[in-house]
Image (cartoon, rainbow, N blue to C red):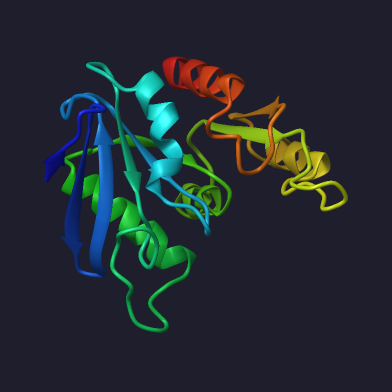
Length: 183
């Protein structure tokens, strides 16, 4: 484990599926939030969010999914949503989080949805800006509303950001902080 000056530590955990890199902010005995990045992202996408929210009363644990960032590349056929979901549970276990909330960005949210069905409170941040002009939105408004209707505990918040900037946007950080305090 290496302690960083910015208030986090990076460490590797050996799971049955392989070695995963984790970045952890806040007190180790505080309630945990596991942060799961999207398909093309890594754990550093949660740095700003964690710097603002983690501390003595909340720890954030971000994961580099297998084959991404500094986690181990595993063999063909070992990836997929279910295996990533098992890895998230394995990391929560490894850091001693018997219960935890999850923040999933993009496909990280799909991993979160797999084992919930979704019975725990969910917050969906929908980006208002297109990724690029003419490219469209990752989550169309109708889909966000369909999700909210299917999951009574869900809240949908629109943020004036795009797919790549949504986890660092001030409005996102505020919405996530409020959600964690009231869930």
